[in-house]
Length: 259
Length: 304
Image: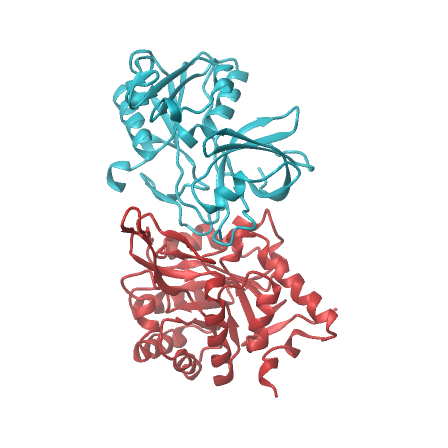
């Protein structure tokens, strides 16, 4: 897919929870084909402390409306500025970037797991899987009840299992403690979340020999494979998470040596 | 129309805008956004004799008006380059320059000798200024005797256009430019990144795995411009200026300070069309101000 640089129009910027926003954008040129797992590089203007673009996962795509949604968590001045975008403003994107998740084969049982901002790519992935005739299951992990992000759209696609670290909602512990994850048969597990979560999910999947793909959120400068800053150690050497990823099969990652 | 052509040694460039090494990959990565034949040239990723994995992650930290990097010359080595990358580069309608690195003088010489034989590579940029490697790189570019030795040795085996990329991490960069000229280089390019560092106060750890790295972006532009101005006054060979060029106005500053050509680097990370936008902006400026050629503004501030 050819990459492009384009000013998209903000259709709406909806606050999802404290410090989480969903920005819906429309393209006057018509959206390019977007695969689940791909990301955009958003240009942040009017934020002097922000020099580089901000990589953001494709959260959802509505082909009928011709809109693309991004899930933004405020993590600094750059994302803070993005959270303040209002309808009608332009947002310059370089996109679509990166590889995509491998979609399941007919009849397979799939679990999509993540937490916090890592939920971003899972909605569009779930939607694509659902469209292919497979019901996706979701395992979402949060610190406590007050940190749980609204997930009605996930629920509309398939069952959602929750975990909280303090047990205030769902299973106490991490996503890997959720009984449905531990006890049921899964052909494929997809994960995006904080690194400790992804490592725990990867370890469990390796043990049970489940196909597992994770989407990494390494620090990036260019997003185009030219700066070589976002590398991840793999069995084929250091690869760029922006072009060879962000989605990797856990068997290709050398997490045990990267700390 | 203004004449944008410039010459570096015997080599004529379509215009004075070149993409800097380490910020344009091998060109192909930017082709979705721009027509490479609209550029003067590209300097492809720093290359070494042997394949290199570079430094561990994290290798990048965003800073005020710039960024630090500590990539450490990750590349697949000259054998892979010759076999898998060079055939594509040979088809580009722009000058493709290779940035040359090594641990030892012998490495630099052998790599330069190999590149001398590649017909579609009309020039090399001798990188004696990489701040992110333990051996070679900046170690050559910050010691006058070592710099002279490596330039002289490469000059003996390299018969095409030789550009020496200088480090700003020295007391007197002019001395290194003079050495390059004396040893027969056709040009000097400056500046490579400035050595810097950043710490995350929350984790109480350095932001780069290597602790220190190279600073680039608008943060370094005034320093780079000053050095280009000093060097351009001191040597007769053409100077290629770079350091924080984000737009045509920035590039014009370097040309007016005495640079014959400029390199656009970090800007491409934020605006992948930066190189061709700079070309357009320079041309627009010359036409507006009624200059018939870009050479009219080269070093214009030094003429009175």
